[in-house]
Length: 315
Ligand SMILES: [Zn+2]
Image (cartoon, rainbow, N blue to C red; front, side, top):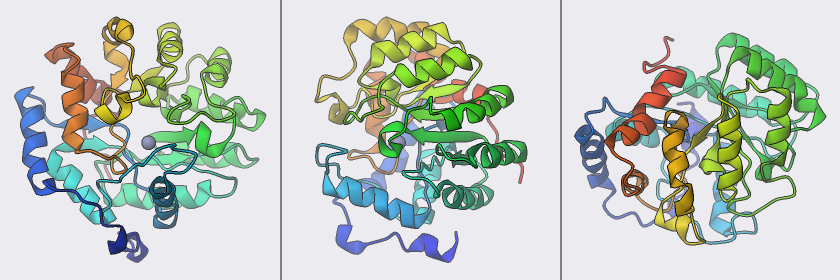
């Protein structure tokens, strides 16, 4: 990676992560038992170091946007994180930057583009913000072959149906480029969180390939209903069903049949690296749902491979 990619390492913040050396073998044993070629994780973050540091500072503060302590298990350098994911057997994974204010998306996207070039199995990821030049840079990235976008409603503090974004949704819907959208009101609600603004966008752009992050937590029922109405809407499992995420109630048991109905549109997500538990815990918490091996195979590999392609990008 670039020289400054190494500056996000602060030994003073070194977390306690016993057992990390044993994790690769444990994770590989999990997916090998399902006879999969590996894992496809659509919700991984790799961000420009200056922004990554700012994001981790928010996590470390356990401030009002999180509402609780949030230890970061994989606070490693960029290269170390890539190698760890490879050792887990992640054959494809995203990089998902997200902008918290106007004017920073281009910076994030430039770094993400360089990252994608150096890590061919990563999904080339980008972000956008409601600002005048968003349709221009989104259009350019789509033409150049970007594979996925990410937006974060609570962090960005904007509604998805902001007028500046209307042409952006049009571009993405027409191109079929997926966008991971964190719009649910977890972990802490914001002024614009919740299903309303995504419903408004889908009413106008029904072909949009939206991937609802965290299964829409905590508005699971509303986001699952949006997916039932719109065949291009997918959902990712990120942090859902884990013990950490379930402390406030978690996914309602009576909605579990909907996870089976939507089996082909649920995608493994982890939120690596900013998770407070071992990566394997996300996988085991999916297994504990008891929805069967075919469901796990679809979610952890086949659905992502179908949506994005199983093979690394040619670079
Ligand atoms: Zn995330």
